[in-house]
Image (cartoon, rainbow, N blue to C red; front, side, top):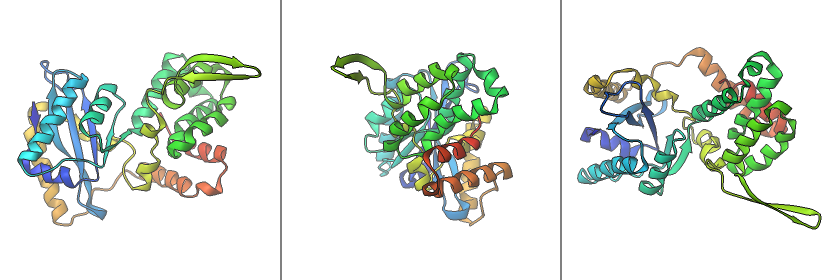
Length: 299
């Protein structure tokens, strides 16, 4: 079940990026999730990321996502709007990632930085490291060096990971190996000894650096997380039409030239610090750059 007024299609067509997000907390029992697609409306000081598509889904399979995207593409074609988003930002759900690759092959797909950190934090908890993470500042900041890798270009991430891996706490070896296997180099499937050299064969990582590096997003001024859409999922499904009305009101305020609402000061300050470190990267060694980013990451 897709809800998308025809008037929203033009904003989807013009947007430089889409943000896709799903929630399981506020859906009727007949459905597994509500999936939303958001797009940037406006420019400069009055731009806002607004929900353009709502979908109630009974399944989270790759085929279900493909049907959703196919339906949206066809609806766009019926209204003379060709929907090929340059960039799509989403979480790390494999089914939706695969469906995007099929239905939007020309789009650059990026994983949300917040969800990268969330996945990493869940693994920290699963391995029983959460207590030490909360008690030891050095332990926690060393682990955050790993997620700080996302601020590097994708091509530089593997070698940077190899440089920081020996510096990780000994009791975090399993955590570091998990990240290496799934996000950096891939799992080793074969080792071969040739004279004095050992060669390894790996499967590609499930989530390669090209997916989760936020370097290109920052370079283009795009958001690196889905957090800008969080508030929309706090409303119940029965009020989707009211949400659309709110979207239309916000669009009108953009047309009138009104500035977008101010962000919270602590969030703005943190983003400014991250951007300052990022913009002065050439003044830092690799380890100092990652440590600076790590100081401004929390999970």
